[in-house]
Image 1 (tube, rainbow over the protein chains, first blue to last red):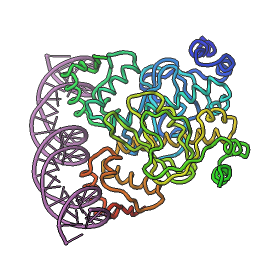
Image 2: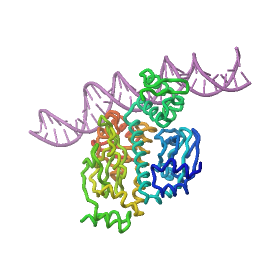
Image 3: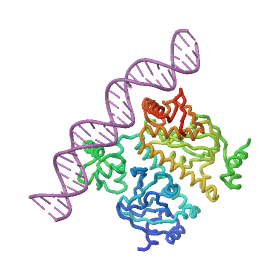
Image 4: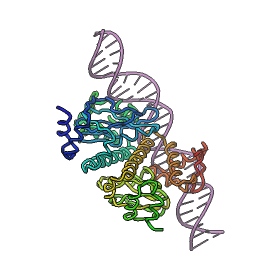
Length: 211
Length: 211
DNA sequence: AATCCTTTGTAACATTTGTTACATTATGTG
DNA sequence: CACATAATGTAACAAATGTTACAAAGGATT
């Protein structure tokens, strides 16, 4: 299947015909495997990613290399925002890692402006900004208003959506790193959540119930 | 001074001539006093604010009415983002309050798209999105990676910038509400910061040193 | 089976943050 | 001035989160 076909199949519900043609010309198809880095810290962003299948997770990273998960980018989704924060040279940056095996297309960032005359592109770009802004607000909510119990449960539920599976293949240690806390704290909270019937704990796996 | 004059004086360094003319036609001038609500919770946003002087603070608010300060909008700045999160009907919303006496102009939101053919407008809109995204990331940094000492000091320094004055007229109680913590905690931390020589405490006033 | 490594469980303790309670001080008002 | 009120200081305690240490369980490898 060539790029043109992939684009028609996946984005015809989003974009008008002439834009689809331009996309086909320019877009590069890419596959990334689970846990592969799509963008590392400090790296300059030269393309806009457009997700076909799978999902990408976005982290904030501080000077000490500690991470905090911000949100996922999923099918039919993009993240026009990622481009700029990596160009500022600020002291901390963001990081993009494949949550699962993911297929996406890449568009050079200058097209972001060039294509604004397409109504569907404007809707897509501004829609994306707005979605990501909302997700950032949810990240703030977690940190500012919730306790560890609630935060971890929300984290697990978000993962279920991103992976389209209530059975998550994940260890306590990974959770602790993505939420910038400690493994012992995570184990303690997960035990509590299991007692409350919210989840079921298995080795290297968590089943999210009541979803 | 009429609106046209105000716009020429304040935005000619930002926008091209023809856009300035359009702005003059359409923009409404507005003054808000310190602590006045520019936008209340759940209210629909029908305009884009463009700050001339003073500053506006933006809060995230949860179901219980607890606030958390996100960032300031200052002179020559806007917040194109504010428009959408208030239209979603989500369970929590954002709130905009004047940090100081503020002068601004209001532009109907439909102009955001209409004016995208102006290069200077595109730069302004995307620049604004990007700035606010960066400030949201800083809010995340505070919550995810810093302790109360660091958070309160950062909060005070941000206030100094927004108010253009190292002497802040503020009470411990207000700080505690804007950071969603308790007054006793704030007093305790401020005392520590004073000991360390970072600030000087007065009644209803804090002087930020080492700035 | 014996060994090694990763994952999970859990106790004990430390630190940070939040809460309750009350005293003191400054300021404004009748 | 007497009084009320808001702002601040501080102790004592509670709760949440983080840390250290170690044990046990499950897989993989030899």
